[in-house]
Image 1: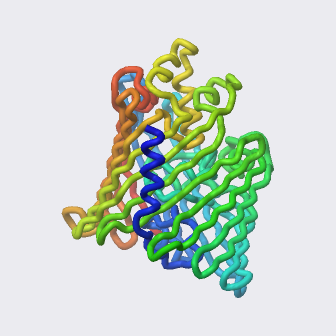
Image 2: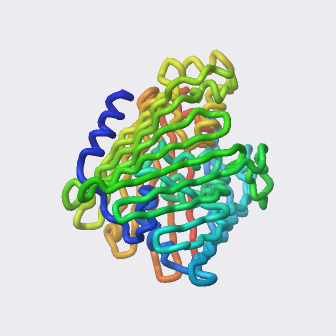
Length: 419
């Protein structure tokens, strides 16, 4: 499976080229081609208040537990002086939850950095930056800075997870040429221990060790601009990555990404066995088809050799009763696959059935123990308000991967007011 996926990822690179981004600087970061990112970046101020009530069913408890959330989300992206830009982004989620375990209140400093445009082709960033890479939708092996970046989850939508996570403190430089560019990101070790206090900066989650990333893209033909990445971290072997997305017709985008490098398995990390590092391969390959009536459908195949296969997963309870939950916790922190092979289907429909009603949904199917995560959101947009309902369900046989997640299902209603 790994060889097949990796071969498919490379063959995708030999396909057609990706769309040229509107902003030349964004050409280096294929992951930032997410549909909602350009609109958000164009605003100097963006802020909203959100209130939500939800219920969730935990484990074998037949009774659902009610809870509430009040959130303030704000972002500033403005020019201080010619060539100097300030970006501040923060989200506060205040929770009222009597369940066990309860969801804690948390503030997330997503971004806080200065960006200096040295020239039209050179940029330096300093501060906490949400560094994102990856052409795929549901699983991004080349998005190395996602590790430890989630302090809270208000939606499992992959786009929301990328948007709402905390950035990494970095010094980042970009050099552009007409046919491509180069980005060097240096991330120093600041704290070794995470801080779960509500208003903690929590540098230990994102800057627990020295890391670096070199990313380069080159336009080799019209519509062909692959990205090659090399990532290194203190105490780990270098990792090599590739990204490509390209048009295959007027309505289809094909994408692929893959990484290679030595590292521990998820089982070794979860059980802290100190096992020997082995060559690990991760890959995503997919396509997105957009209909003339604003419905986009994405289908994606996913693979991670570090994740357990069926026999390894089934052996976990015999090692320790809590081992499956430990592995799921590690996979969640790394935002890695909890099972070796998976499939992901995502649909988003703007103005579904009626104007200003949006529908989004995904199914995340793991193919080792045949379990799944399913999510659906309906959102109606007015000029200053959004009203949304979302439901999340984990299903499968007893003992399967997603069925082992304590939260079986949840339902949330939320009202958002744009300031």
